[in-house]
Image (cartoon, rainbow, N blue to C red):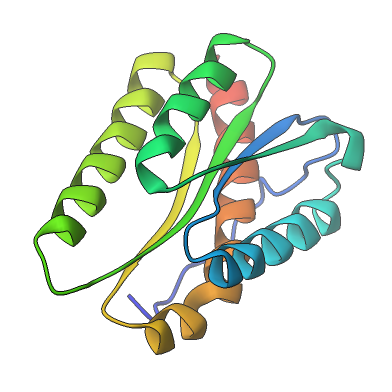
Length: 154
């Protein structure tokens, strides 16, 4: 929820983490802003630049395939999905939003690997622009916090 109270975590030290980012090129001005905010926050949290692996794919439906390939490498402490799906005039919006979201969640559970899902699903460009920076920051924080939590629980 926009403006939601998110609480404070004590697990935001990224110094020892390796993070993978998959960014969709579709709606690239939005996904570039998501990626920029995400990168800046990962670096601010202590993740070393050499430990951030960033790839781009055509669109939101291709994000899960790249996430799966990264998960299978068993190199990453967490992954991040960055995309933007804007409602159009057809059912295609629902298909892309539902399938990409379900696939990201399934991969996280199947591989027991945190995946921060920052695939925006919005009604219009204005909504995407209003969320692009905050969701990029949130994705970085979620990835670092959940990587640390799961490493602690292992």
